[in-house]
Image (tube, rainbow, N blue to C red; front, side):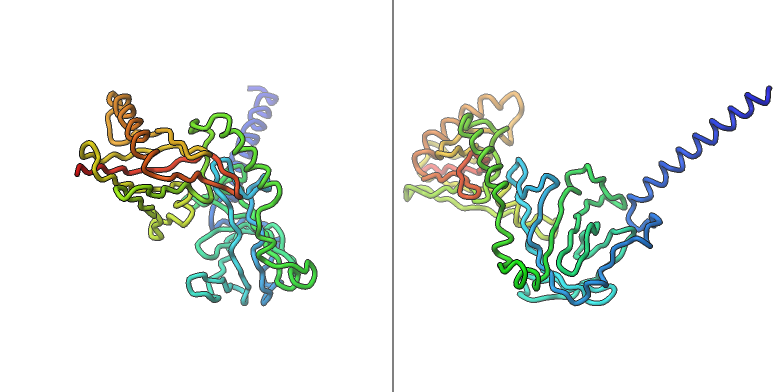
Length: 321
């Protein structure tokens, strides 16, 4: 074997080995608890020890508070660093500040309140934190929508003495949010029963009984133990509707699209085999048209005061009487 061939072989082997090591290094940087070698450059919370910060913006990568499904990022936290590894966080339930552990992980990644954040900016006036999605021990990349949430905090002093405004005013949705929702709503006006265009209303559709023979109950699906938070109630609104003196006994679960004018369109049919869905949908169309449209006043879902099509989950019970 010639010297030239040996040298070429060694060069290729070295190149492959370096590539594999680089791949491992990149994976390591995205692991919880890893040390990416940038500790000397990390931004430090100690520099803002004792300063009270209010979260004033929580937005997606496109700088909007809403996504196309109607989910809204809402700024709500108030925090204050206390020492090297402690932070005080406002608790709405306790109506006061409580102390939590501030854990430094690696690079610019911290954990508090069971959430991981990457610090993007720390000054005495403001903080910018990127909320991270963690699966097991791996941090999702910046191209994962679950890690594309950015939280802006202003100090209380900056809000009062420099901006001369209030936390409540700064937390309001932006003009860009209003324009975005208007554009989504307009699409539902043109095709009101299309489930692909419908999106969750921040004020979900409402069913109000229009007869003593019917009742309507909104069902909450919030479950703190399984981390089903308050937003599930507007993303997936559930109603239990009971109809007395119906033509027969029945109990059906299905979803409807409620358009901007309160008209209902049967969408998902549940609890039935695929071959029977067409027949069941026809039956539910009749129940919806005869009973629901006539015995309930239906108010459409709204977001930022704008009405639009949205989906509602229904359990409709008929009682023969």
